Image (cartoon, rainbow, N blue to C red):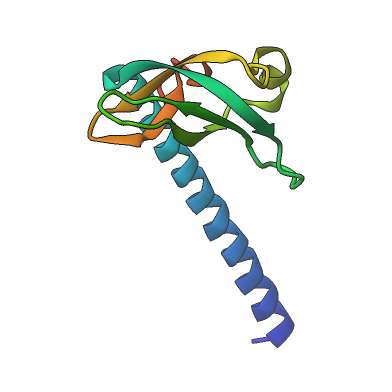
Length: 123
């Protein structure tokens, strides 16, 4: 077999595997966020920072803090907003804004900003 063809085929196979893995991870993360909204405990939080990584295709990160029940200090977390870029501009909270948080009582670090989680099933 031609070595150039073999290298090109290997490269394309690697790209395909990376795309499939990325899609599966993104779907799993969206399902996890939906589960947190469904069974999590409500709290109020405050947006600390919004960051859009410079790489094409990356998701916006919304950093926030909140005070989970039974904890003596605030917890800082990051919500990765997986919605399409067109939907983001008008619906992202402002830095300093108060937001409704949902978190898992057994692991408060697993928290999301409730209104930023899509209600559509990610099946």
